[in-house]
Length: 251
Image (tube, rainbow, N blue to C red; front, side, top):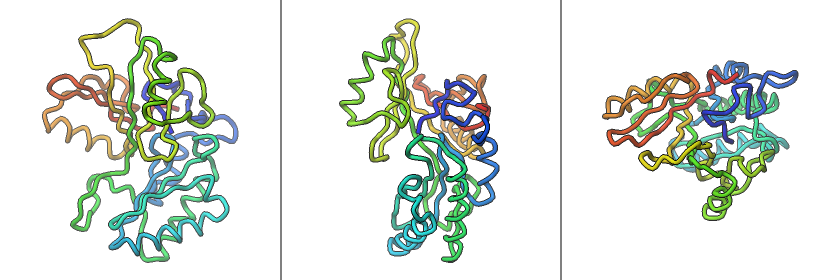
């Protein structure tokens, strides 16, 4: 489910505006009112619940709403305080019109339970519980020879190729969807003075300003915003970098 910061702005995740393919903006606009956010090539939302039993009710209702499309598009993280729902075509690692339709169908089904879908972005009421916005984490590894280092990371992490991306320099993903995706950034020359692994934190587009302000208030520095709103490069006081990324600025 990778959409790394340096990807082709025409759409490395297949959402390039070609006929029949919704653009990132079209996807985001079509599901925002239903409480879903487009994050790193997937639709994601959360449902606050009071108990694990209630969470399983939500999961069952979401699966029923998705019907026979559930296995190919929907996965869930069910906990005692929330259910996190993700929609993405597992065959292509993209969002299609089918996932957009399922988002609305699932939100309606959740509403019938007296609950709601929402991204938990900053400013939303958290009902006294710890929360953060929906997000997806990637690890970016700088390499001089990506094809040489990729097999090591694939083996040591127990990862696999992303759907439709099996080349020697393509990203790697956790086959059970629990760990962060890994992508590789081409280096032109060795950089021993600088960290060569950084985190990409993909957040809802309306969460990014809050997350950046919080990082700066916590002692971070803004390294670059030249590619904003696709991504901002931040660093801690010792220069270790992280990127806050969104879908914007990529179509």
